[in-house]
Length: 92
View 1 (cartoon, rainbow, N blue to C red):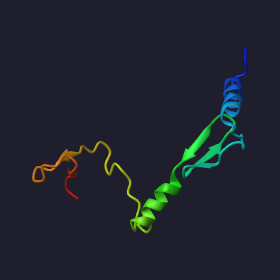
View 2 (view 1 turned 45 degrees about the vertical axis):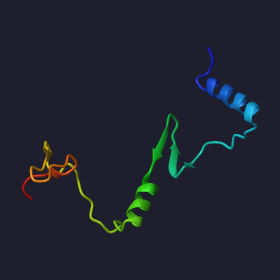
View 3 (view 1 turned 180 degrees about the horizontal axis):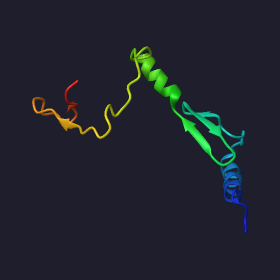
């Protein structure tokens, strides 16, 4: 029985032969997504992208909001708006 990583090794070798690539090891950042490796998995995080969006739109100093605001909160369209994406969260 082949080792679990054997198919990946074979693919990497075949890919290298076909396209002349070089394996530079485990990636830590790719396409603005950070990758953290553990013994059994890879964890991906998009925190950098989220911080950039917040900075670009002036939200870095905003207070956090915990959602849902109430357990079991039901969202429904506002009767006066008629838009599907506009929601009435009830009394504030």
